[in-house]
Image (cartoon, rainbow, N blue to C red; front, side, top):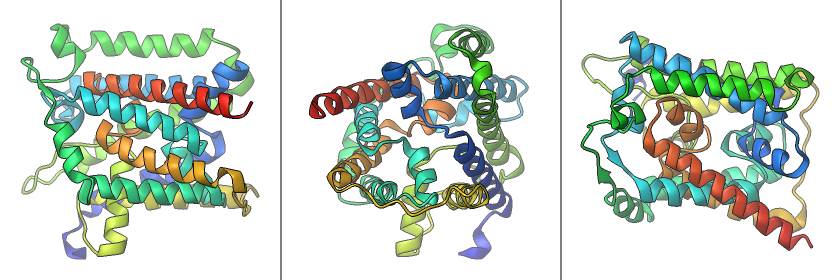
Length: 342
């Protein structure tokens, strides 16, 4: 097996994962926090970080496609079909689960590396449920939902193709809107570190396309380019570790270990690593939230990073539906938590 691993993909996945882990740990990057903090306490810190990440990712991705450097149109996000049921339903489950677990997919990985045992419980059920949806007993449901996808006559799920607009118009507009939002919503100068961290994460999305689409490309075994995402790589990594079955690319297999190592190193270096036992009354929420995130992310075609950054950066209609589902799920989760706490 080892001799078949592409060293460029493995090294790129590990390096990008380590960089992501370090930046996410230091900046506290989390999409759930971006939403909940804005709604509950009007804190724009994490929203600014997400907008910076998305703006950089969108502009960098369209640059790679426009210059014909990476075949972004070949990615899984831009398949010529609209998986509306999976995107909306899976996104809803993921958003609800993320709110119950107290953090999105990436934040759960980072908090686990920081020694949070509640996050570890959520991560375990996340990985097992994602593996069951991808390879196990829940796979028939995933196949059925995927079969409900609507074919797109445009031959591409990007909004630009569907609207017959020039390739760069919508990405440029979205990128500018993201930066304008970061500048004019709240006081971004009060947390420049979070904004810079988000921008670096956006660059890592672009780096992922470059690694998988250029330097790690194999003419004898061509694969579509991919970038940062958590759910499928986590399921593939657990399958590899527990069953010895390597599926997918070396980039995906190396990404999750890289994130855990990077976040652990950053937490230890900053003195923030400490064992934190889960509160007894929260154990059920951690387990249920992790399970919902794993199943939901597989049905939605990605998590908050996979669809909310990498997929959204391609302007995929399916990805944008998934983001809408995730936001809807987080809204339901927040309402349920507020009600249950009264």
